[in-house]
Length: 452
Ligand code: SF4
View (tube, protein in one colour):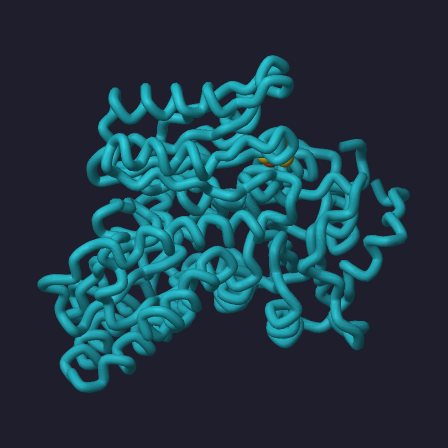
């Protein structure tokens, strides 16, 4: 493992904090042959729109694209669960030669008449970009036939990076926004954007806002409903949690509807409190909201203080590596780990931009390796080199951590326990403590330099 060499062109995507005197190479298409951890354009749009639970999601492409993203997030729904089904037009050689429009039209007809969804999203995959089906025309035809929005998601897999998939998803949501009634939306109201209700996290956050006196018009897209998204332009403020995926939509809504936005994070005590305060500050015309926010933060922090001290005593002095989708989450994770006495020795993301990496550099300790669009060989090499105890990533990073014999925390789509909010902060400490200190690692050889 130690002998693996870096691809020459990848060198500028990896920097040590001290040598960060030039811009990191980021926001670029993945280098061919590097076997990146990053997903394709289609996957980017699919993960953002996936949690909309009362819509049909039809993947126009070969069956593999649908299988790859089937039930891709642990997003919970309080009602319908149409999002958990994976529909595909199953394109084969026949459609590559003769076109897939007939099959797409028939599939939409079948799905809409069977499930009676509130809307349908049709995702274009690589093969559609090659054969050139007119997906927009089919969607328009089916939309007027059934009287529901049928939205073409321009997500041809090879046409960019995962980030372009986020943009395609934002454009699709923007087509819905503005088409519903804004009647009865109170003044102190928000849309929660970039919150996907993994393990019920959106419900936790919404409950905080209910307690402090703020109305939530829509959540995009966790536990999402088409009707709520259609009236989202009636809110006074957009709060953006996963900025990588939703910033474009926030900007579009500000431009068209004059709705301002603020970036927030619900990971780690410091950032949860700051997020609630910044939303309360926005509604300064009602001082009760600020008072309620203060009270809520005080009560929640006091409640977990004793237990957090216990975890701190167990985790102090450990070293962690972070590799996440959007860099904004990495900022909160660094602060959160630091509050537990854990130092971050490697930090990276799939989709961070130059500004994100600048902030990351400022937050990191001296000697930290900062890495963009990494691959398993690079991550494994640096994790071993830095003698890391814990890896925080997603499903694609989990087997790597297991093989390396270090603790792991899933902080991505598939997580089964809520890690957002005050409760999430405690869950996070518990989770990393039990994984990192598990006796099972005594039986692995890899950290001592053995084969992996
Ligand atoms: S869209 Fe293309 S890159 Fe993405 S899963 Fe399908 S075939 Fe693979």
